[in-house]
Length: 160
Image 1 (cartoon, rainbow, N blue to C red):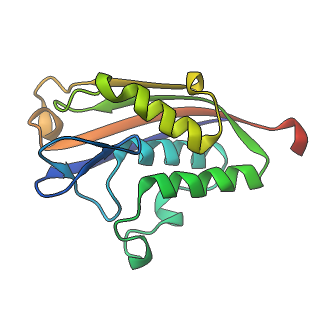
Image 2: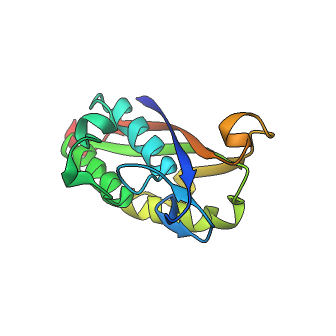
């Protein structure tokens, strides 16, 4: 089963920047009801879609104060539990983070390790790439960061 996810958030001052579940030293952070981690949100939506479990907004509504400033690591952990309960395991995740800054490559190994740990998979099952928007639109002007993710999941042998 395959799923796709996307997210975008505006960059603002006086917020920490989280991508892939790790804090990145940067002068701006992502505005959102949660910590705004677009990479984990895109991955979460891809996993939920592949498992036919809806989307992140259904499980963590942005108008629900219980989730105000929630760590996206906690969101992904919750979704990992949903998948496990359905007997679904993650085979592969391929993701792209689109931003002008910060550079993504120096953080990829830490992001992969964090995501792999949460999902209980090898970090070789996760690919993360950074791309720019070549100066085009809100992302290109440095006002936003977006992420796309595609995942492959399957029913585990124990659940069949």
